[in-house]
Image 1 (cartoon, rainbow, N blue to C red):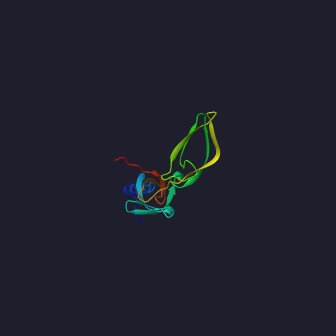
Image 2 (image 1 turned 180 degrees about the vertical axis):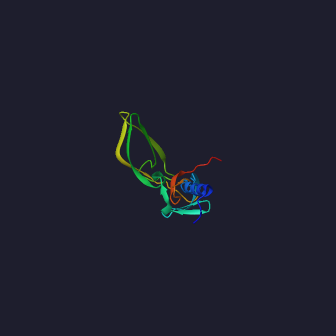
Image 3 (image 1 turned 120 degrees about the horizontal axis):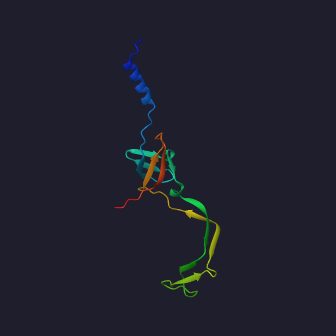
Length: 146
């Protein structure tokens, strides 16, 4: 058995303190969608992350939301390609109609809005890794101004 000296005790204590160090936080990263949904993959540097390692913000995917819309002042406009009579015209006669809401208010309740836009191959995304660096949160689509 080795003799415990002040130097050995200090070395042992330093090693124990070092074990408690928190892992280095990588921070925010930019990745690129390399494979489309539903089996999406995102490339970060040389690493390919698959869907089992990714957690997405809902608005980045197709989804439906409930909608209630109320306005105290509204006016609607409608344009449609249509024939002037029951006969077909070539090219079609284009006309528009303005529709004003009579009392100046408009309400739409218990309706759905469906967002169809989703991540595509080549899109850059903003990622943040969990502490275990095995799970990545896809926060938003990245936009760069050239």
